[in-house]
Image (tube, rainbow, N blue to C red; front, top):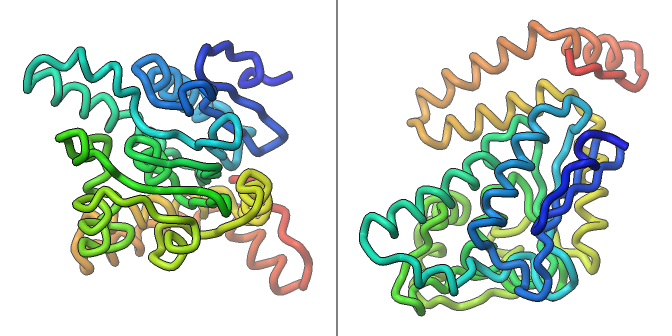
Length: 265
């Protein structure tokens, strides 16, 4: 039993199978809605995962088959009494999503059912999204007199373009898995999202760990820069990759027509 398996949370659960860790939002009676406790436990879990060198891929999913995360816990919105309260709520949610987005390992969302509001924002913070055939995705915050506050306005626009993102946010409509796939909101659709996410994770794990991390950093930093600055970032990351033992191993394996044995060094 690993350190991750020993973590004791009320609203999330971590299961580790070798280099794959699965973080499950575990509030099925509330359709896995994100309340303050859940956000705090996600942040704690992510911090622990960063410290576990054995984990190579993180999968995030929801308990049960009805919802990934149906949104934020609306009952807690009653506690928002001022502009300051609202801003602090948004910042706290953004902090959790940013922790996920900046993890040095690949993160896959297994979207099993509803991913609405904060749930979709959680999926958007992941690198790859796998949706079940029955998934429904959307940002319906305007129906509450709000807007997405956990990163949705920014990450969705960067992912699928401003026009499509505005359509989803202004109409508050939910999209089915096939439409989400067509617009680039999700990467895969499968009957069993978690099983497919595991398959994708296994493919990723065949590759060099440091290179995977550098790819993530180059893309993330490049999206916030112009093309010229992004190309400089790419060159920097490329240079760092060539200084690793994994680079030497990868080239040698290719030239000698054998599988590479990457060590993350």
